Image (spheres, rainbow, N blue to C red):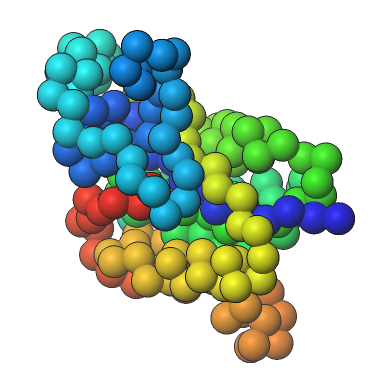
Length: 202
């Protein structure tokens, strides 16, 4: 059996806890313990100025924004990682400040492992061509992992990835299958300019 996930993460410093656009991080819920508001179709936390300022003061370098060349390297590595791990990458989009992946894997593979491996191997690929950032990392510590419960949810997630505005690199498996097979990693479907788009994706 397999499960399909929508995985999202941001680049370092580009989407801080407390962001006015919305964020997913453990926060105090009244007098109770910290909780994570990440249930689909429900509101997320947003615009907590104190939390945002605290996070900004802890930053070790300015926010990281990927160039188009870096985004292509990242997407190449995402596809290579999925193939190596025997995961099925259905869709991927890399923007200047975040990425989305729709990926299926056997039920014994935890989504935290998938997100960790995608980011870790992408970091290695980036460091082959560019210096390691002063932050010590290209990415935020965690990310969003949404289980897609059925085929309509999977199709909706793929369309969500496809509709990203100003992606630096994009690849949709079904588009390449229609042309007679999966294209080589360098033949991505890309569009848009280098400018990243700030958007709500939680």
